Image 1: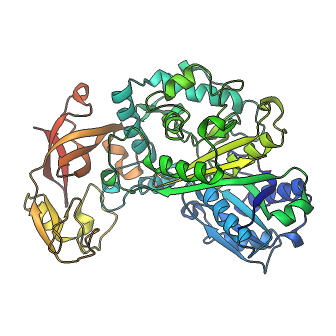
Image 2: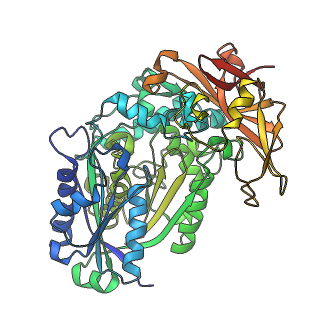
Image 3: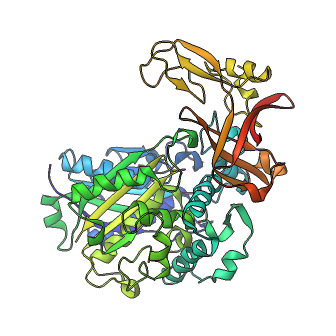
Length: 384
Length: 136
């Protein structure tokens, strides 16, 4: 197996993009990734298009995306793993390139959500759980995470005020990210006073549906040497699954086993320990998810995630800065684009191009991306 | 056909496990036991996850459970919005079995915490039939 690097990244503005269609969003990210890598389309061997296709008006979007990017007749296909689609897309691209089937592959994460009405999205989200045994009771995405939140609160004394601090932190950094959907800081009071969605989660504990795209150009080590003098290496990839049904999961639901399993594989492959990670992007679909992720990734002991947060250790300047691009809570969550967006932020950090939010001496970055209600989790470790 | 009767709003109509609905209509909550290896499953399964056997027996379950976790939903899929706020819970039933179910609105919100003792009971609503967690 050859080494694999990320040689270019691109990112569209995330948010309510009523000005752009799915293929046009994909083009924005792809074109800026080509500029970043100083490549042109003839040098791209194929695309892995990542989206949770049930949100798209276009059926099987890889076809139209590849056409619009000017890549026909090169190989293309869709990868779907709900909110983790493009983290899984990176895994597929890694396999395509490390096997030498291809030399250079583009991972295009894209989602167009705001064209659907809020009701249509709610209907889709209602079927995010086990459609035979759980959805018939009126489930929703926030409801599942709220159940983890209540379990964590009961076992460890975590409070709604603690969770609000996640939103406050991430929105503070979102204000510095020109690609983010929300570029305004928020106060803990505003979070606490927002309307309930699924108790204990309130509106501002939740990320927002959004449109957007992010693109990663992946290459073999030989091609990487020709393309760039600042490669970011894919050092470790972990992916795991969990029962989709909540009834099928074990334990008190105060952590995601699926993330612990994915993290174990990624740390092992990268030969990295949690305390060696310099900067991380974790899946903050909800405020509570970020706290659980600190613990599941080994940045904090079980029940101590809130302490890490409250002592500012996950802020810029702390032990392990997390989501200092604003996270999903600021950027919005265009489902299929989120994983590639996290990786894009890490690539900027590891190349020392993160501007105001640059972590001094960042050499190892970690991204963690959960799919749906926790049936998939992907952990990617990158090295400068 | 027939499985769509399960729940407040059924999405799936066709399933091998549909006889479960007829038991519910008779006020019985049943699990499946694999005739080959004895593995007990709830929610019921037509196929054994352990030995792949597809010969199953229906066995009643007692329904006594302890709450693992819960939530109260305020913002719901459109078909459920009129019923908000409503409670959903996950409970441990014993024998390693768990159930995801609505919790009756009659329960005192202040009592809701992991470990709360509840019981799973069959319930009818219009054409549909389901189960819910109630106070013991």
